[in-house]
Length: 299
Image (cartoon, rainbow, N blue to C red; front, side, top):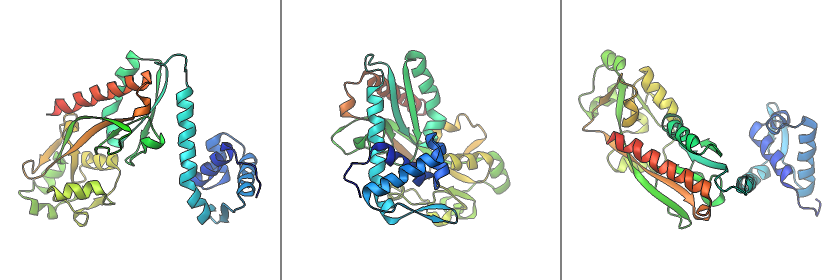
């Protein structure tokens, strides 16, 4: 173990190898050679006095110590990215990069026209778009702005509620012609249902509010909302869908619209430290306006 503090480049190599599972994969991600990444991993192991990886039949396996270090290294990466974004075109505050995190369905189905209008109005602003259902930690600056479906509780965050997105059960016309329209909630057990794989706190809260869907009822399990939407569109079965998206899919028909309803509370969230950033305020306001219009058109 050395007394010199390891540099960020070493931790960056560590994360790349962790996520890719091999030195060659980590090197491709970073645009470096495999020997260079190998030397960086060795240097980090020597600096920390620990073993980070062991060889396995499928590549490199992270040690228990490496798994413990991973979230701290991810925080370093988030901080480094935030520093880079903050320093981008500092001389022109309406220039630079803003990082947005949003769920996959909203990012793919809803945001593109909103971001297009933003680019046309402010072409000097660049967007980093993270599609993830994981709640990104704005306090750690994993992202600058988030579109969230739960109200944030942290006092250091600026949050604007833009409305609630209605949800309902839908199925493709072809599926309903083949299998029939359920007449009641109890009839759902005789149908191919599309639903979640891992139960989350959000899903449990929806169930407490009366959503009658449980995991053991499903025929297709996936936590990827885009996969759920694609399965509904293809005629696989019945699943939950944002009502606004159905307007672009006339072959999708409502199922038990009076008996099964829910909604997604929608918030645009930003760290209060970014209040003075003009480009972040521009993007924040554009998201508030765009998402508000998307929701109001459905109501």
